[in-house]
Image 1 (cartoon, helix red, strand yellow):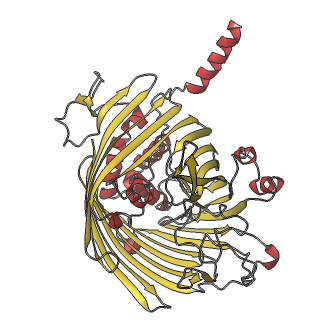
Image 2 (image 1 turned 90 degrees about the vertical axis):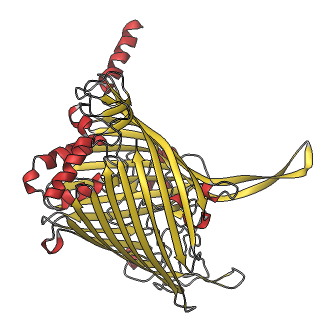
Image 3 (image 1 turned 135 degrees about the horizontal axis):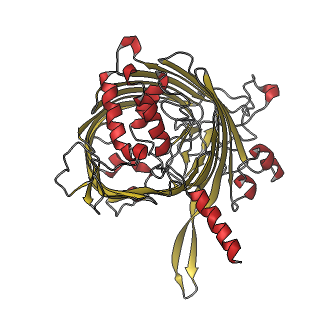
Length: 570
């Protein structure tokens, strides 16, 4: 018996142990600027096999790409070398295992680490607490944001909002194999709640909608195991899935982060990803009375159990292209189905074997690397596929298309990137005809591109990185959407496939008409600028002009929104 125990213990230790004890396997958040930098490096041909169709990536992966760029600094501009030096400093421990030059407010005699607040404005990596030994690492930071914003125009008139957001995060790796991450924040706000609800990230929080509360909170956390070729993760973290410069067709930033389990296999040119997520379906309430007090009515909020399973298989051919195929399945109103927890299976076949109750989608994408400085990508998504009628305008041909071009240093202007992207989503895409909960959404928010079905979008983006600590981005979005027609009482008059909540009905025409219904045109121009005052202290500024035109009613709405934010990672 003792020999068996010793054997199992040895197996567990062999799995956890790695000679690269400083390898950090926790992920890098999707909003980190290193992704913008590495994307530019990929397009310029400086790095290869940068698999960014599913984000985030681990710190170990990011550190590896930065080392590759470091070996090719002769191909970088002065500003790019500055950005690289900044990222190499931030990922120093992930590369070398050294804490040299770090500052920790609380210091347990770590070699090369300064302590206290005297280095708060120094150009070095700062932590509330940083610790590392041969077994584990632990890094903790405080988070503090000050935000001021204002809107003028037709939507809200002249309104303003301010908030102070505070919180903390910690991360680390145990035995070089098991990573962990936690982040939690809470914000106290003043002014217009409606203005904050126009923010695509803040409006995802629950508490910002609670009328007797003046705060909103966010939290993410997970554990992740990295076994070199294979990795596994469980927790809550924002995911992006798909090739896009704006909003991915599969998973974008449109929904709030949801719990999931994830597994990845990466070997040479092949990468395979499995994910199963816990979503939230239709919300409602039930009324009941307590047996001891039948005069009191209690309303309990309820929501349908809902899930997503997704697989992606990707092949990368350096200097040529990356191709990917993925399938997704939405199911609801039952417990977790073991068939969809199987990491390697054809989801559509599993769905049929489970009674043909669920909503399956497929997507195929390609991303080119033929020419340094130019990238072209394309994606086609099938929400339903009938090959015999593929070129006919049938309602059940529910397809979405996306194509984009990335130019590095357009017109030979250094440190500049230009992106253009087109997205078209046919009527009835993401909706489901046989279930009120199997649409491609959670909490009523589309998982993919937010424009929804019966819509077309053009997106233009120009990024400029003139200095190590300054970035500027100009973005223009043009959207056309055909909405369903309702009468004055809110009753559906004409279903043109413009909503994820209403699938095709028997009384609706068999043929769809793109952009039929109430045509709404939206134009949006945005300017973003970020200046890093000193390491880990940023000043953001932004301006947005937005106009929405209802062509049928000949009405329009115009708004100007602008603001500034001070962000500190302590």
